[in-house]
Image (tube, rainbow, N blue to C red; front, side, top):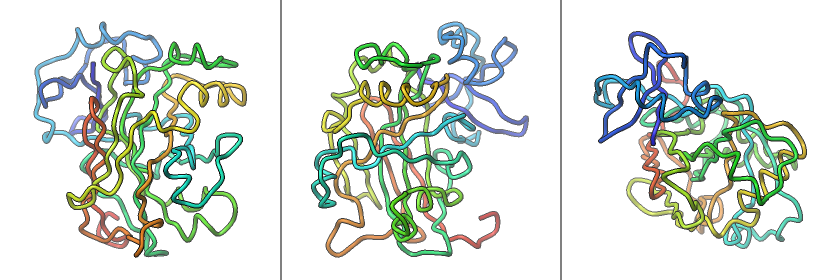
Length: 281
């Protein structure tokens, strides 16, 4: 099943995604997608879906609009580690993103006025489905709700101000998540998925999820040893090779560029780049 979060004239909402339309879920015990995930009640929520509306009649917001935790994993594809000239890490490289650094599908992402070194990183994001603490890798998938696409827009010069990545990863509306959550019943094996990132239709990144240095089980084991993962927490698992900073010449996102993160069996997350400073931006 597929579920999206949205906003319309009535406020925030969520719904079941079917045949390119959204069927809002209203009048139930569920107030949002978080509550469905926490209750592990996808079939119950889907049964309450109302008449469909076209996806372009609502404003899609990040799949999880305000997650308690957003973990991002740096240097986690073998090919990407090689293109960046790094050694394979002993432990996952962790940083966090703040919720207001993200937008939803078909919403503008902002190149900040502070930098022109704005780069693209397409990623698979894992959404936690159950409270998880000290979970072993072999049990990790029991704690996954599903998957979504993630654009980890990176401001590279700020990222490199120190050894910590946070500064370059949290400019307002510099990344995106969406277009929807695909539950694990539709994707029993995420390692067979292929991820592409396109800029203006040109394939810039292409990789299989099985190229992960630390796979999903290992990440959940590591993170759940550090903190308690909660339903709706997000883990962006890293990006394949082909990022702009590693190219010769380097490629930086420009206003008007269209960035698409395409993961088979999930969908396409599409965002246009705008410059900071316009009305509403």
